[in-house]
Each structure stands twice: as structure tokens, then as C-alpha cells.
Length: 109
Ligand SMILES: [Zn+2]
Figure: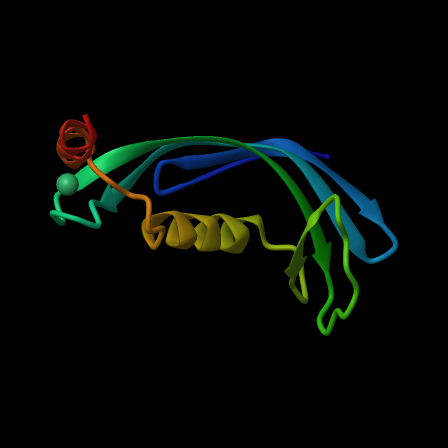
């Protein structure tokens, strides 16, 4: 099944495969997410482009998968997955705006 869903500027595109009661999703996350610079708190848009491999399992899940990121969900909910991806991008410690990046660069050289 093809999936395409956008949440707050972030688009998940991919293919989901159902195996038993699990879903395997491979694809990409792409878009601009509005984040805040961790140094000066200026909002800016961060370009996101990453490959994803998700395995959606029913909780509780105690296994391990070295190829897929495990996501526990009672019912497959792409929007919820996107929402938590956006959350984690927003909370990331390497959200640093261009200005602060330049300052860091000047300090080092
Ligand atoms: Zn900054």
C-alpha cells in the first residue's frame, strides 16, 4: 500500500506492507519543519530529508530489530507517527540557525 501524508510541513512517503498484525513501512521523510534555534531561540525552517524504516507493532513489544525502528501502536496511525517525528525534530539539540552556525564557525577558525 502506498502512503503519503503530510503533517506540519513534513511529508511521509512510502510503502507499507502488512505481515501478520505488523506493518513494515519504508520510505522517506521530507519537508520543512519550523523549529527554534537552541542557542538564540530564533524560529527557522529546517530542511528534513531522511530515509525511514518503521516497523509498527502492537504493544507490549519486547523484541529488537536492527533494520527497522520499532513503533508501538494498537492501530496503525500514520498521522500519529508523523506527529511524533515532528515533535522529535523540534526537540532536537542540533537545531542551530544559520547565524549561530556562522558564529561557531568563526570561533573555530
Ligand atoms: Zn541561533
